[in-house]
Image 1 (cartoon, rainbow, N blue to C red):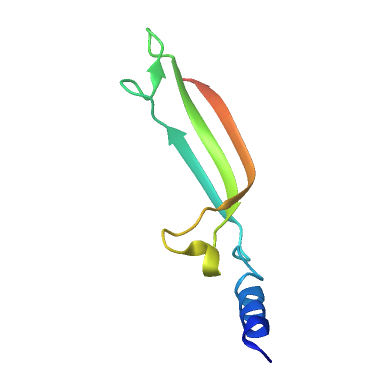
Image 2: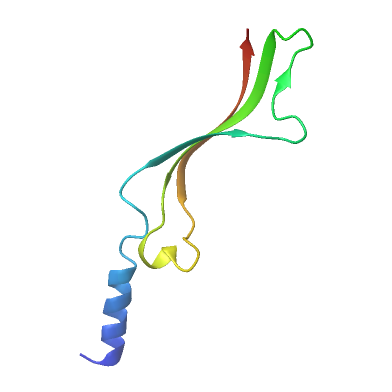
Length: 84
């Protein structure tokens, strides 16, 4: 095998699986300054914004040098209002 074939074979092995096999789930409230949660005047209702996300983490050569960028497979933003 010549050098070019070795390089192509090596790169194809490194790039075969760029994302993890496991789905990672994340639920995070979004905080907007100065008030992350809105409270109604008489304290009967509370409202906040939250993001739900399912993603695959980068792995292998795609994770270098800074950890890579995840592949987002589901994302939903919601405004939630609770009536106390």
